[in-house]
Image (cartoon, rainbow over all chains, first blue to last red; front, side, top):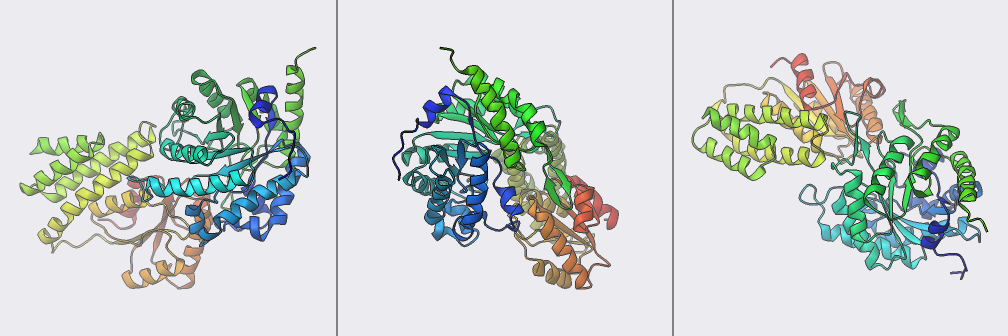
Length: 310
Length: 213
């Protein structure tokens, strides 16, 4: 690891808003990853493609990159017969993200996604099994020098707790906990699929000892809904906030969900997230380098306004 | 005994799992008509479904309701079979979650609802390969096939399954319904299915239309 003099992540977000990256999964699919195939394996087999996607985000102005390890817990990888490659895939994910910064002092956020099932008694996975998988993943990411661990797209607080505890036990320098909400069927509220409200999630995350409360993705959740989620977070917790909205609500075309919100439209909505207190902003499904480039401009203007006058 | 039926309905709708299963056991032990008892479960499930639609219940409640139905169904069904060996099923339905998708909550509820509506249901489980659907159709000669899937990638697996059934020459006398995630007319057309259902009751309505009980 190269010793750098860069400002620690938490200190950086207290001083300025950081731009995170855009989508990875939909970008990999555009590069030829088949639906249902293991994208994380590409850290080993197509590292050049992953590196190119992340380098492009850095070029567009991302201060933070999320490692391509969303589904790289041993439980997820086992579905593809790749559990024994968990450490290798996570290590490669962290290395690729660091390389994408090409010496720039960016922040690498080690990604832990949901294990993709339900915990007992609702599902078949025991808390011990899930904890062990999260801990293994977090340890590899931390040992690979990530600046923070981001536990994202979580819908169950029980699972989130296991992942936060695992990241802490692994010695994560900072823990970001990100919850995915969806618009309820009556269209009037947002909850996780398990019924959790934004307030419940934020209180829970603050109590559990994570340092950043975040929200990403989510069915039907656009940037306006996300601004509301952040506002509701803010009412009950005082931790720094982060948001990664999808590029609008997806539309179904030829059996594929297509995200159509343009970079301009998303960038227009971005001030709402910033006003609601977001200190890190990126974009989730369907977003591209063009979205992040415009985010960079909006955030630069915001940061310039907030610079203390001397 | 009528009161017990309502009580059971309310216990299920209010997610009182232990008490619901205990009461159902007591009712069956004291000779309560198992078909009638499952009817109460069906009504309770309709309430649960409505509360889910209205955003009052979420996934955990659906799953818990599914568990209750499973436990009570396992107690009641053997009694029905002994009781009414002459009564033939309304028709045969094969159901399964398509390849690559592991979600089964919705499928299990649909299976239960179809069974208590008099259909013989062959449940192939989750992550079902295309070939298994084809061979099972050959074996059981169902009137209806239900393809379930929650993930977006399920749409492709559904499409492949329907195509394989077509190629095997088994499509003509078979109605295919899809459900599970966010399905609509576009997905129906994409997959080549005949209809889609947004919840378990819609699946039952479709089957009633195609294969009157």
